[in-house]
Length: 531
Image (cartoon, rainbow, N blue to C red; front, side, top):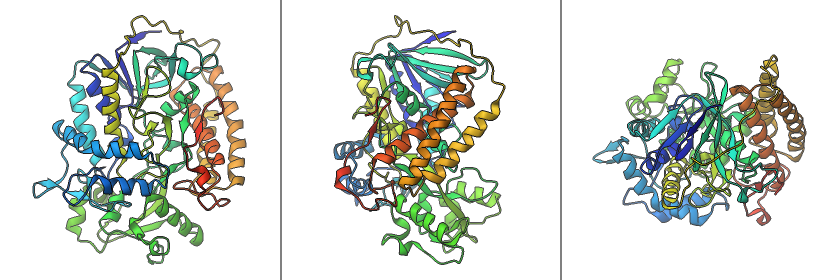
């Protein structure tokens, strides 16, 4: 088994991972491990934009108030305030790195999205994430200190001691075991500091806006290492994913509603006025539940987002990617309403970290969607995710460079062994369990929950997980097997967290406890040790 040694390891190539790698490269060598090509990430698919105070009629206090209100009482105010006040500096940094945001009259063209009281969303037409990724990848690829390892699937963290023997706070992360897809071999990547920036876990659910790589690998690895996961019950379902047999996971941005889009049922009637005084500009949890309610009430397969009252020239210029994609599928958004359904989109929970992205284990940081900083609370404010990624990439990199980080040259981790494992001869077990978990999570642990549904889900996921664990140790690892293992781990974590929260708050809605309760004004923390 070959060993790669670097000063820093970054797992993931979204905005958080790339910005951290760019900054860390000034202090040493960096390995960026990506499951596919570096361009494939949740960040790359982000359409709406990045929220920041950049105009005279906006303020930090207003952005803070909007974030806290949307977070339904569970945001960490200190984290919210530092993130929002540091936002303008991160925007200027992205611009300096070459990110081209849309401008109008020499100023940033700012969008309005649900939950925001001001126009403050910077965007690059309707492909903001792709533009930020382009700029960051260009900078990272030009840096000799950064090495990319595409088509490597992270397997587990390399630890000084086994989690069963030592609590995480007394342990140390030495790096990552990663499966090289081309050879089927597991390689050791060693470093003094490892940064998890592996994104979210939308693929735990049957319907998601996320790319195929979003299987929660970093969260699952951290959980197996004994670290705490926080607020895993708060899964944000984006209200509007394109409903079309030829469109897989294509998002219809929040920004369309911000520019005047109206949600209508199959009968053409606008229905959001029946659910919120903010109508289409209500926070995502309210809009997603409203659509779910309408679908169940009417038995329809989808609802429609109507943009036909807006000028065709405006729609084509403001939303070129969405306009082109829909037109490719026979939908002219200037003439026809867009069929949409909710889909799993973003995890407000993740690996518990502090204000610098530090986890509870030495040598390990987590930034971006894989982490829980306290910024989002029970529901994320639109376009605060790219902001969090950039702010905490910067803070983590500065903390790492400012601290005493160890070189990996003297580390002697336990070697990876395959034991008696053999090549799999029953891949159908993987595909069957993959489909069963995702369907079960969608039906029982989705937008609306109940004690009975969660209990059923818990029992079934436990049985499936036991089967997966046995299969994992009997057969040689493949990417599909690793991803199945991870989504099963996170399905269990989401269910366990949801069962603990006996109230409805933000993204967690249960018919058995429809009201908020002050007893639950705190994060839900779980670990393999049961706390």
